[in-house]
Image (cartoon, rainbow, N blue to C red; front, side, top):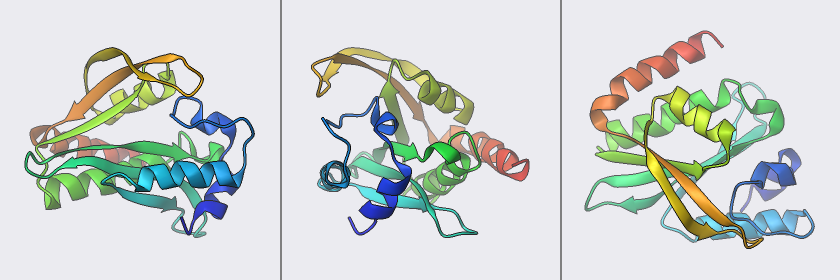
Length: 173
């Protein structure tokens, strides 16, 4: 919550087009409510920052943590428009996936997105996540639209080649 103002500076309503956030008018209070909802879950959330400038560039979280089963989800990921399609997402995923596979010893990491969100789907495929299928009408969005959700996952044995791919992407950035 301490970072809401700087996150608001890089966010726009379009940032949340496919997320479950309702607003009639875009404001910092709306973003604060969104962040509050994210933080009320069993989650670990981060502000992504540019190492050189210290500027906030986005947000991502680990949530739906099921410790007994060593499974979790990574998501609620968004970046300011200027940082989309750059080194930011590969760097964040490298850190987060490294943590969950190498330190937490996760046996499954789930990632999902609105099935209509072609950009997020392409990013998950590029990451190396395995497409598992689409759940139809599994959420109702604030505007009443029924959302279909595309599910992806990574398993520990898939992590080493994904890590190498992320490192290569960062070296060429």
